[in-house]
Length: 567
Image (cartoon, rainbow, N blue to C red):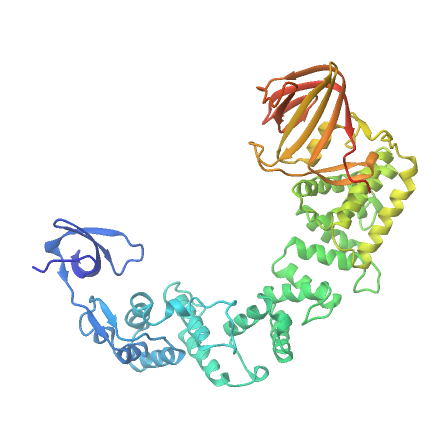
């Protein structure tokens, strides 16, 4: 008996069926193998006397090509040893011509389609995958540089996609005639200029994705752009979701190399999208078209706009929500209801404030904060007039707007409106910071330490170093961190009308006077005789908490020192 080695190809009979495998491990008389017809790589153990060694077979490139064209059988390719280990004398790459010849030869043989699947497709796909270059062909993607459309490897990939749908997925969407058509169209148009070329649906899809999804569009020549536009327009007429979306966004915004701004075209595409594959963002875009009368000479259609913004607001889309708030407050397309309008706006304001604490400023936050300021300034809904609070929101609106480029008329107008609103109330708000500090209290988000921490630090930890300058005074130095161990610093979002400041701060200095109660429940982290450190994540009614557990308590008059950049 031949002595087996790791890597040998062997035959074994399993339930009266002969199977081939590769030896992976040998332990005495027991041998572990992986079966060649299984993809999961599971190891099977057999005694060595059940295995039969299979001599390797050397396969010539010309013979491999003949099988790829289905001119010889797999048994002939393997020289009558179908379970043998194959050694190929040269690399070979399957071509579209091979596939076309294989399909035609299958038909000439008058075989059943299942026979073609088992004797050709399955052998190529399972046994010869790497040896005919399918590993390289299937690795093709839209990021590869391509000089012509399509290339042969793209057609081969498309053909195997079609055949996998027929033979593996067993769908009735495709037939083998589609494989022939894929190759025939490619062959007939291979050397034609791009404008004269015809492509199949799959070839068109790759062509479109290659230019639209990779940032190459700006470098495309005029013929490429013209061809792309033709395909996109044709597919839009067929209600193709991808191209409808692309054209809608291009025409709705400031245009792109293929399309100019065209609200009427955008409206048509968006209406089809809402019928075919509705999404809140499409409703929001349509709502803006109706609200501003983009396709009706500036005459709004408030009824349609209200319906669209309602869809967007249900999905918490910021622009839909603040537009819907405007419509409720002004009675546009719906009964006037300031209470409902203001509550809708407050909900999205709080939602976006969470993002700002993580230094992600949404482009619509300025619009929303500006409207929050108007609610406080004019006492809309159930809100009392509060000019200090209004100034608080206007500062946030200005900060958010100035965090991006103000390079369009809408942003410029919003900035002007914010500045005008701030100018109106600035002389009469309570500054209270002439001495370079403000007294903190619980009467507004601008002056409560609890609220400042809650609004600005959505998730994080605080290290507070304190010292006793006097018996009833404390000096508190607060710094902010991302992690429980307080090793990674972070910033906190703050707004102080008294300091005319809104932005990010990495620490506070607070003076505690007239201390009535101060209790430190943590073990002191002493740096010297008169300073200690408390670490916490939240403040509630004078209690300093870490993950809900009190670690300190302070009852005193608190003053925030102005260490912020003044605007």
